Image (cartoon, rainbow over all chains, first blue to last red; front, side):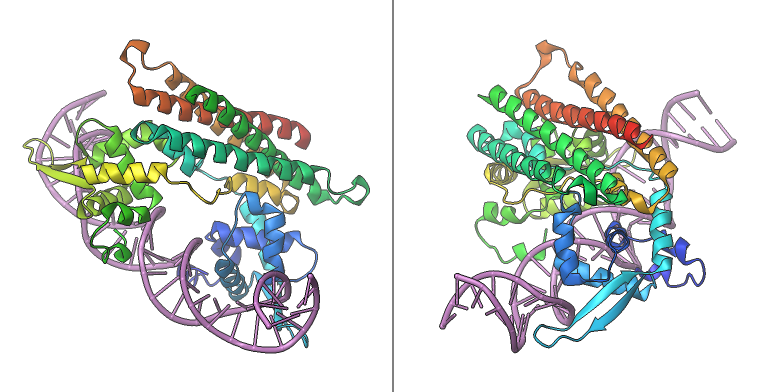
Length: 196
Length: 196
DNA sequence: GGATCCATGTAACGGGTTACATGATTCG
DNA sequence: CGAATCATGTAACCCGTTACATGGATCC
């Protein structure tokens, strides 16, 4: 938890207005899940779910979980294990739920740029070697094409009978990923032709 | 310049292999331009050109320029002014040119996720208020729609006769921005219907 | 019997953001 | 005559990344 929130004695939800994106994301995941989870397992969940939108480093994950507990937004439970390393399970608290709800309801004021290293490189293309750029453009396209097929595979993953309400939102974001990936692939192909 | 590059006595280009994205971007801009430029003006250039791909804070810009000079990748020239504050003009050096060329030619190994605060929020949509989400989705769509029209206006900006070789690359990246923005707007509209 | 899985950390480092500051000048 | 422009900076803060570490258990 950032130091600047320490002096906020009351109004925890308002203090929560100062969480990092990473903190909100992890807190949101805890709220998304139905059972307490270890940091280790949470990582895997991230990879399978929001990974394509956003991803924390391993170290960050553990650090954030502890911060959330310190802020009262999550609770922890230590579990002893005999044949495996001991672990700590984290769950969201009512305060935590209020915090994400407040975050979700709050309007964001700025729209971030679509950051991409490769596209930035392409912008400077005239200063470099054309063949190298083409090579990287191909890699760029292939990376998005791979993503695309991963997303599309997920699309039909869960059978309709087992769907939960939150799946609707998962699918919306999935569709976002699909549409944007598709746009990227098509653009890359068109640009490749232009470079040839 | 990061401290870790200090001990590299020779092979400046290789030391340059350790620059930040921000540093490469600014160096690339210096290489892109034909004349020395002040930090102040460079900011405006950023806003008008690569701004939608990537953008540094004001403070960063000035700091990076000084770092680039310290590394020998850029040169500076102090200009006294009578009716305006004095300024410093920066230009890329031959070493700097070699550095971006090396960067441009180098393959990137990782593909970053398509980070978006709002989409992350939508992923957690089930935990929040539906109306608030719809409101933000509209804002999201409108922001991209605005971008879209800005890009499209740029597309036909420069008359064909005055075009320079680097414009081809500018247009490629511009088209990327257009296609992705279009995809975002269409997705947002479809999702809005779904939420209604 | 070497690799991979489980499960979690520490330490160091640095880049980037936010807030604040300055002071003359030109525009409306 | 107040606001915006020009032009650059300092200070503080901290989030996030990278590298490194541990040690038993299971898999092939």
